Amino acid sequence: MSAFKRPKSVLVLVYTPDAEVLVLERRKPAAFFQSVTGSLEWGESAHAAAARELREETGLDPDPAPVDCGLTAEFEIHPAWRDRFPPGTETNHETVFCWQAPGRVPIQLRPDEHVSWQWLPFDRALNALSSWTNRRALLQVLPMRVG
Image (cartoon, rainbow, N blue to C red):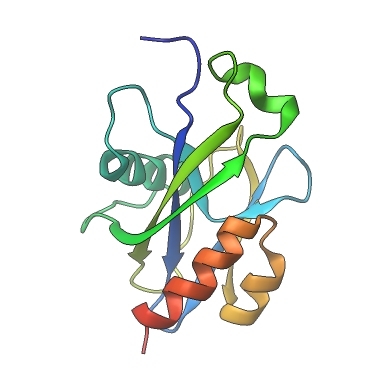
């Protein structure tokens, strides 16, 4: 197993039947808002990582498992974080998953990763999200998942 992070990650859009979206505020960088995200561990599948990250970051039971939404993104790793990855790694491959919560359920954050959470209507969530891949995923996926 490598001491470096794997340059593959998952983004899990968590939403309610009423199209409210879970938005998490990261501890670092400050005021960075996102969906559930995380790197795949070495040897781990994207499906397994999506379920693991959902459980770790929210305390929610991923049953049924998050669904692969058929959307991926390739993005540049911020230079300040490149030392976490194998030498020469500059990009990350992200796979988008979706998971419908039964409603506005309470979230149990990992305090080392996130400082707050909120359920937001689609438009407010779209405006709050900090990364372009997260906004694109919300725009392209959620309208197809809720009626």
